[in-house]
Image (cartoon, rainbow, N blue to C red; front, side, top):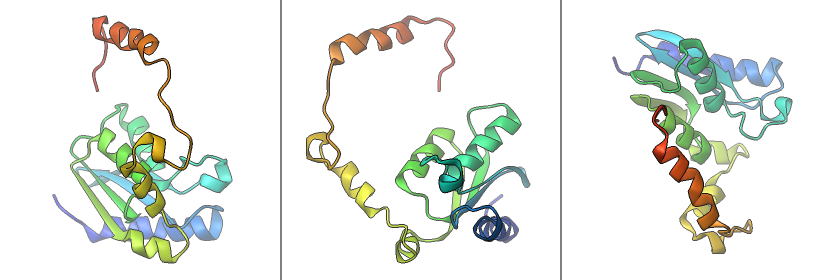
Length: 157
């Protein structure tokens, strides 16, 4: 179907509402399927005490609950800002067909939401990251993947 301005306008209005009324951040997102909004979300990080409660993640959760599926095939995501690394990962796991965003990550950085440090950290080896990260008990944890591999009634994703 392609980009439709009305959905981005709705996302922008939701972001403004988030700032003005809902004690949330200046971000919002919609999930659209077949020309209909099936999920909405705005940033609720501070109000829900949840660092993962970004607009895109909340919209994905809402849409998936509404359609009772863990994937958003044939859906479009409209978001008021270029997704951060966490949201981009969540979007890819949800597998929509398109992402449309308004503001850029540079625009967000100017407003005080700079996630460039996360992009930089992802590029580093674990031992070079700012948060101490090390691999432990890999051999023992292998049994988890062995159990998954042998499970006959699993739902693949």
